[in-house]
Image (cartoon, rainbow, N blue to C red; front, side, top):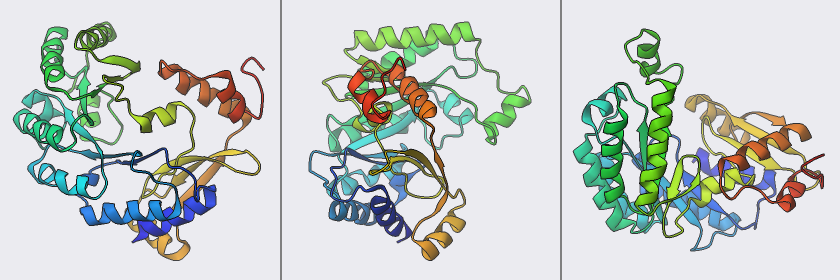
Length: 310
């Protein structure tokens, strides 16, 4: 499997061998359509090369389709212990406009199944600031979701990305986004409502209760190194000897990525060395996203001993 060869290559390259794994995240599309045996093989490879404990957070993303919901128990049996469910909306018209394949009813059914399989460790994603969405409708929708949610919820403002059908509709004036003032109103509503339901906001878009924050996402915001495996994946690593940080970008095309993996053991497209100024900027921006921020000690660790004000 190309994933296994690239995984082995990058673990060795980054100096991660025998190091403790902070988290594992299967995302970037529809990983829950993969065979559980393939997920198991990847986890076994990580455990073979690194320190992967039973307490390590291992998340998989899933969409609320019947096929993916039926596989949840199988994923749990091979080592997955956290699920991120892409509900996106509880409004059928909105789901259709967003190009989703499930209905709101299927989404809620999937959530109930997920809470049984991954009790206490389920995240749901919701998108707000959609076309024609009013603050009142958003409040009602979010209130419903919060009543049914497990211990984590991620609330994202709709971002229209270039190259998507939604972007084309937006450019043609067929999909109109709410005014910034209305979006701000919706965001403030989200923060207040989440708090009333016992969810603590620990990052711009993320809310948790019972201390069930996302270890994986928190690693990004804390400036930790991470490996991205697969076509289109990207990572950030620090050279164990020189201390130089660099970003790594994989080949986008699955066929080209797989071909290069066969030839070289990896699908790396390019790596970019970060200047000290870029490292500082990245650390500051990411730490500002979360309530935990960043300590002076952490900052010095990633910036060659320099202080924040330098």
